[in-house]
Image (spheres, rainbow, N blue to C red):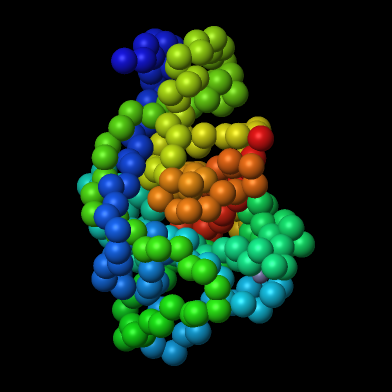
Length: 233
Ligand SMILES: [Zn+2]
Ligand SMILES: [Zn+2]
């Protein structure tokens, strides 16, 4: 059991780790890869660089998150797609590590119209689907750099080995690999907050750079503004 320094305890947040099973679920389910919810006449999102279908990373049904997060991130389905085409290195040309890069496609869709009987494109290797069946609730704390912004100096290696929690997780504190990199909302300029951390090689067989970590963020006031960025050491 890690000792939580008392001065950092007021900054405790709850994070949830997805519990997954292999295989796909309903079109509206929270999941990694598999079939996203798409409207009847929508096309699978394409990369503006290579024109190939984007890799579907994940979707979260915001109406079915843990009780404590009901309405926190809005309603509908948050989806993330990203170009992983290794022949063209689109993410290098389009700086895929940056928030709002054109080789990402993120949105919150309201699954109200008729859904499409989705066919997964066969043009590249798509990740095997994993259905999120439950959430494991955990305590999470900020890293020492964020703590220092609150005037707290942490010098506890055991703490820093354990927090922020690594791997894929919902909410909590970001495991920053480089500096603190919350994007700003393009509408109001406010700092966006973490919705979901997408780590390398956790639920998805993908590595961001050299064991990097990715972050889906959202503006608290403009919930349709969602972004993805990643960093590596
Ligand atoms: Zn591409
Ligand atoms: Zn905003």
